[in-house]
Image 1 (cartoon, helix red, strand yellow):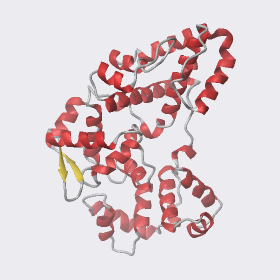
Image 2 (image 1 turned 90 degrees about the vertical axis):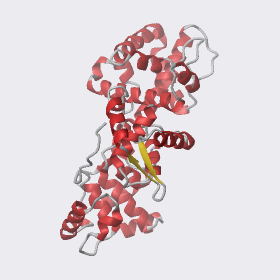
Image 3 (image 1 turned 120 degrees about the vertical axis):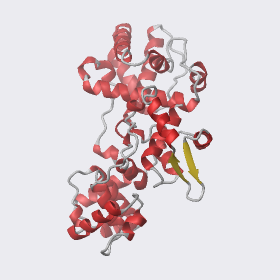
Length: 357
């Protein structure tokens, strides 16, 4: 149900401008300039990378079911999806039942994963050691997470029981803000002394949902917890200690970040392509990606003012956000790179008129 709602929400935004694969790339967090630009252009950043391991078969099955139920239409010739009036009504009906508002994928996609892994392994480790049980199989297999938990153990080893009680109180307080079933889903994933948290299969069976939905619920709840802690940081010191704040570098892909460093040193795109042994088209992709996050991006360096005005007029005339259609409506000699860059810098130019969920 939750995955269906998210697919429909994305579909209502994208309309028929993108293929059905675009939504899959958004949900799984594909690090392409097209995907990153789309989430900003269509105002669906909250759904970006919320299910990194979503199986394509499960996604295709969801699309097929939505189509069979008359909630969306699949256009075989263009591989695009279009939400139906029935689909729009369904979204409005589910708006208060499904926690779309929990998600903040672009902001918390990495921080939520680290937070969950730290919390899960710490609770398991501290609970077992506090009961003098030193032989157990860690539920998180990540050297960086293990190292962090070991450091916390060194700091708290003389007060494990009181630490666990304080952590329990913080979790209890913050989870009270969620529905009872949602809080239970989150807690049932945690492991303790002589107890292993539920697998995704067990969680799905217990709460009568599909595996991908159980995974999405845990992710959404994690995002909402991080947002609450950000607003009331001092109220949850132990949980807040498990959070890694995002940085501007993390918003960019590693390759784009390297390009941005060279741009700051006044290298031209052509010089960067030579230095990094990359195609100029790849460097242009990086520049578009950088423009999405840099509020004072110097677009005049790449798109003269008269070309900007021409592109903006073409965007207003276009019936969609398809680059080919926009370019066809320009009156001056304009490149696709310039169009993409302008859209990146002025991503709020064109309002998308579909259901806001």
